Amino acid sequence: MKKSTHNPARLRQAVYAMLTLLLIPLFSGCVSYGFNGTSINYDVYKTINVGEFPIRAALVYPPLQQTFENELLNTISRQTRLQEVDSNADCDLTGEITGYSLSPQSVGEDAYATETRLTISVHVKYTDHRNSANNVDQTFSAYRQFSSSLMLTDVQDDLCQQISDELVDLIFNATLGNW
Image (cartoon, rainbow, N blue to C red; front, side, top):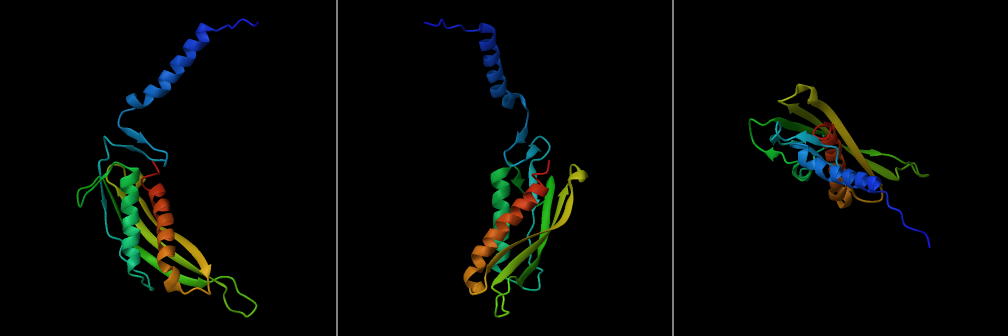
């Protein structure tokens, strides 16, 4: 029978390593490191002002504004501890929906489009009142394609939700997630 040998020094090192990994979050201050890429210092940043995002596109689908704004606010509240306020915030997130367009994509044998692309663009201005190096002034776009045999009115709500989700992820990563 083989005699079991335990190395007390190696066991002690393993225990110290485990304790260190467990205790690091307790001593890391008020900086939050999330799986979403954010590392916001909540000693410095406590508030955010998220303005309305009016539709300034040539083609207007009125429910889009509410869909986009709700997704943006939900993402910020889910992924940060920032408090949403109306004025005097540590950072401001404002903008407008600048594009809502349809374009034919794949062309079939009969010279008609077999797919249509819905593209939505949002211009965003993010102002960090604590560190202007974090400011962002950029346009983000996303799209989804759908079969041209479908009526836009039948797929529009679902497409707008999918595109809004993607746009919010892009915007979040470029602003609050880019620290």
